[in-house]
Length: 435
Ligand code: GUN
Ligand code: ZN
Image (cartoon, rainbow, N blue to C red; front, top):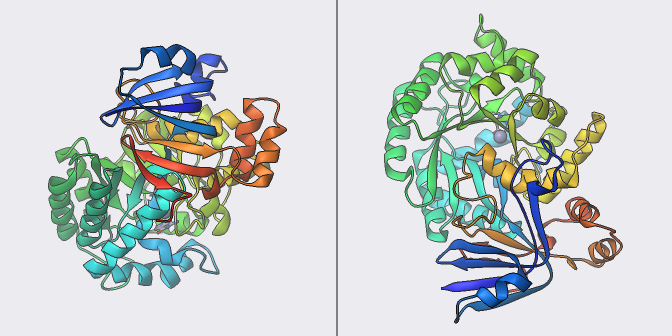
């Protein structure tokens, strides 16, 4: 089936923080996005493309809208929905008080299934079409999650938590069981349709050296899988890591010792890094998930986007639910902007929309599949409503140019801005329909 979506249209070809030339993005005031069998088959100015449309093409008009690629959440925990907005204390206390008890419930496969469905409903509602997702220590948490993703034809990356110490009984595995269970999940799910697997040691505090060693072995045995973990989020966490791994140069060096760095390795937070860690992230080609809403909520600290740009490290934006209290990548970006301001840094509107789309996709090493509207890419896209609320409408009507409009959308927008979410050319969420 061929469909042509007509409306204003924006997508990125490259990173605005690296180059100020106009060719990093394409914007059409009256644009056309053509999809065929779930893939992008054309994209451009409506006036020039309309005459070329094959007969029988279904034309879908999106008045007063902006069509853009789906948003990417580069770090999120699907089992932590019920932990969102839990009051009090910093990371390590918060994990023990709220997070571990909530994750223990995922021993029940039916509970995991219900939570996976609820989580994906919410992702699509806020316009997130791809995410890098933590499960729990239970392998069935990943079976439940991937089954729900498969049903909805979503491009998602996830993995079972590896955690063999410093966590409650019932929530720990062993080095051997985590290896065997992860391997079996990789064999069942990695590259099945649109799904990919991430080897997921929770963080250095909850994995023994033996377990990290086996995580490295999994990556060696399955070179196309991902590595997903936390790095340098909280000062007490960094201190604990130093005690648990005496002799390492720094926190990142723990993961480095076990060969966990690389092009498909994503480290969440990365707030308290020294220069050597920044350089090593660069030379290893690893990526960062910046989680500003969570970092503010847990009082973890202020991430430096400027340092990431200067060190040439890829960055995606993460909600980090339930350390974060906000699913919307737009709202998360608004927090990212405020964090930048507090540091005397800046995130331009173009950079923000790049981070939400192609930038996040690059951090997840998926640029060959998604992230913009180049021909052949998978057709995951959003219809953003320029009249979402009276204030948003007013502010956009008053805007003098595209930059002003994008900035207002990012600072004022949330799920209300996301009118429709399309997956592989099919509508998967409609804000105004009752479902
Ligand atoms: N570090 C280790 N586990 C977690 C978690 O569940 N959430 C956050 N924000 N940080 C972590
Ligand atoms: Zn996290």
